[in-house]
Length: 209
Image 1 (cartoon, rainbow, N blue to C red):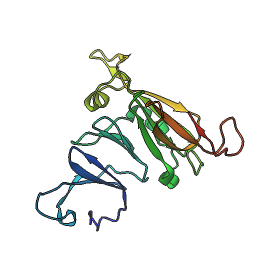
Image 2: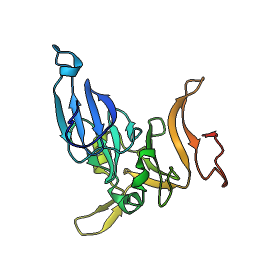
Image 3: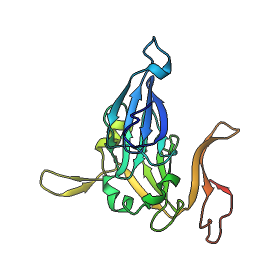
Image 4: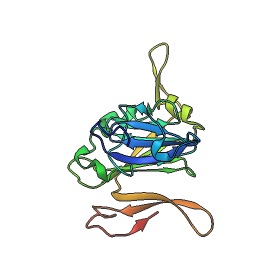
């Protein structure tokens, strides 16, 4: 049992550096093999009581780190404390229809170095937009944490640099997304069509690249 009395459901789990993490709706917990007992008897510790996810697909797996979509923002986690990396688009993030956040999904394209978040915005009940975060110029989780698009200099000026997080909202409705390995060994981000369909109109039931 993972914090069974805190009123939250378990939404996801992932393994990172020989530790097993459980993601509840608003909290994060960890356990690991104690070398003696069966898994049901391993001790569980709380990592965060403010970061979790409402969706079973709300965790994206990167290069020795994960990102977690919570109602307060997107957080990156590499084994320490979860750090928000979406503060610069907070007004946009707040437009997600959290009543239907169970449909939200997160996918990390480690080849193109992009993070995709599909979510229902406004009155939509299924993901009707994609938020894309490009991190191609950043080599580690710590770089992603510390490189917002706009910085304030010592003189109070706002400056933008190339080596930073770069967000872009896409008007693409996609009910799901996955990094798929093709027969030639390359991987692509494949999007499952949503509503409205690509080009407008009804859902197509197709997969798009």
